[in-house]
Image (cartoon, rainbow over all chains, first blue to last red; front, side, top):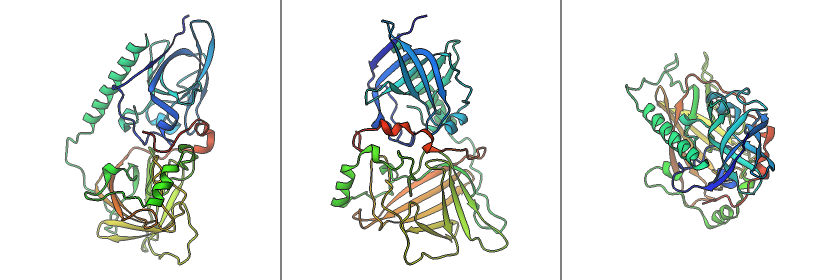
Amino acid sequence: MKFRLGVFMVAGLLLPVTQAFAHHSFAAEYDEKKVIVLKGVVTKFEWTNPHVRFYVDVKDENGNVTNWDLELMSPNTLTRAGWSRHALQVGDQVTVTAYMAKDGSHRGNARGNVTLANGKQIFAGNPERGEIK
Amino acid sequence: MGQPCLGFALLFMLFLQAHAAEAQTPTEAPKPAPRLPSGAPDLSGVWMGGGGIAARNLKPGDTIQLLPEAQKVMNARQSKDDPEANCLPGGVPRMNPYPWRMIQTPTHKPETHIFILFEGNIHSYRQIFMDGKHPDDLDPTWYGHSIGKWEGDTLVVDTIGYNDKFWFDFDGHPHTEKLHTIERFRRTDLSTLSWDVTIDDPGAYAKPFTVQTKARLEADWELMEYICQENNTNILHIQGPARVR
């Protein structure tokens, strides 16, 4: 199995950041211009407030494994968007697009689709509420 | 490999956003606002949105004009200190992306209270006294002391007694304990609650200003639990001035 790690800059295409996306300022924690695509294995899924989190072991091309902490919306918002606490399982292989933390930690804000190995896609936001970026 | 994936994701998001916008286009006349058996407006229900002091919602001609001292306070604010990021109340009229429920108390007697239950930040409530006056010597609080009255079909809520701790927004717009808000709630149709808020704080702003906002009825929703304090690891990673541009 191959795991790939890609970091690249995005400009111009991003939808406007909505200020009301969470209980804290997005721009104070994440860099909307620094997007990462992570492919790896779920090691933990925390169905918690104020944000649901899942952790993914990602192996780079040299075989080094990094555990990423990925943030989603809150349980209430995700439930209304069709998620549940069973949506991800430890051991699931996932591909995630995320905005990287500004402080350099291995932490990201997941957006777009979380894609499972079987091709199933789970949207990481609530499009009807304008909370997607 | 990553860029095509992102491109697809962005296109997908754009499609969804366009679809969502299309879905919101009204196709039939809105249903009229309901009334209580007494004939009074019925504002009850689960609502989403409204509130905030975004410049785009300012009443035409109004401006948010900070006094110099308040400007200094705002300039010095750091995002990590935002009470909302620390799971403290948002105060008035700050809102969040979670629904809230308006509850009236109509009985055989004139109503005594209207309650607003907030799902989000922070699973709290406001109480509006429909039969009272402001006490003379209020302890400053996050939601202040609210008294309400009906002006025709509009619920007018007058609030004083605020503390100066909450921020109006992520940018850190400040206020003082002199803050006085006047809110006007009016259900203009079944699904729309017009919510205008006048901010009058001679301690922080050169003149009052009014924001005009709307909340949307979520008829099929119930409030859910949201306990911000549960696992707020964000606060360890938030950095920089409140006004991030």
